Image (cartoon, rainbow, N blue to C red):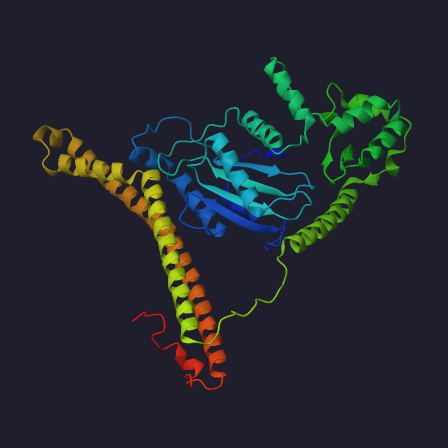
Length: 445
């Protein structure tokens, strides 16, 4: 796993325009899915506006939560980083989402507003994580100290847990940091090619063995790796400067090199096709065999009808108990997460305090401050209740959707049973299947 940390920024709108759409376009073909955290909407086009509004209201949030409003104004509320896996990884979308959320836990940012953008425009699976550094309740800004080290350790432990080390350089840098040395990333393949080559021609050949290419960039000679990424070789070679690279390439016709942007595009197109073919194969392997369901092997007798009714009643009871337990657990979890009980007690105490203030609190203006604080507490409590309601509405709709699907299946099974029963000779005629639904077969009435 590779972690890339962005420079941050101040515009959530610009962030959404870049990560939420195709490059330089208004389409969204490269966006596989999005996921929001700690917001009242799952729509990314609305979520970035919520994040921008939270940043604008930072001072009010601090005052409402009792925080100090002093200090330097936050210039870059947008914090962005990406997690990328090796192209040979076969990952589920749930695993990618869960890993991104675990990385937020490593940074201590699970309470902040977040949008995840899962892109599919490159052969390697990757997801972008955008965080609003302003806390939605306290207004305090998230600290970014040692962020790079924390995410590097997270990626290192991830690779160890999943059984294969892809980035050996990270392991070496970890050991060096333990010994107090300063570290800097160096591409091992590039370092190997540089050390083995005596001149420019040998350097180009050594790069080709590793799947790399020397190419002409806009301003300088660059290297294009086997996945189409372009980078300055001197930044990946410890102790090597531009003049050293120029000296090694002396005597080569650099104008004959491929254009870096064109070469990168060709490699990425080729890798993307490989990735799409591999994904199609995985879908075929994962798809269950398309075997037509066998008809219910029951006799069209009253006993068979009773068995079918009993099974339907049992399935409905299990469905009801499952969602009843799930929603009770979710309601309890949300109440604990948002500290609903503590907020209610705080509001009750503040109401008692403001009900009959003393004369000296009125004179000094403290009674008015208490009323303002009570108003903010009530507003925050209403916001919390709205968040909880929106999340519970999701489970209510899911329960209704699954119940509807189950009832439709039950109706189809009943129709099939009665149609078969009507075909049996020497049996009492059965009503038209279209009218069977109105009958009290499942004792619902």
